[in-house]
Image (tube, rainbow, N blue to C red; front, side, top):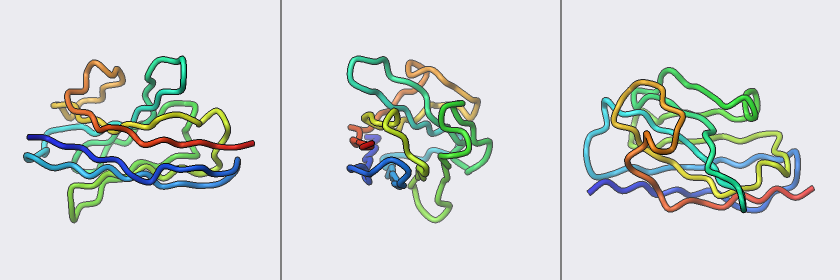
Length: 124
């Protein structure tokens, strides 16, 4: 059974940094792509960043480009989202998800497995 567990969320002041982690287990993911999404209260879930399971082809939403970095640890089944220069508008629940293709996918419905989410709050 595939399981994704996010951690690392919390409360941070604007301009600060956080690193989110997503630990995956349950099968091999060599042909998968991992994505991070976020959902703010009253808003739809939106794409943040994605990377292939091998750690290549990173892609970012325009809203986070240059501030967030997605990375895959080659030693284990963990994907990270390093978030810097955080803004109050980055406040949301953040989710990692797996899509059964190495191709870039930006829509939540293209991702099959989801974690439970971790909350990020950025104060002004």
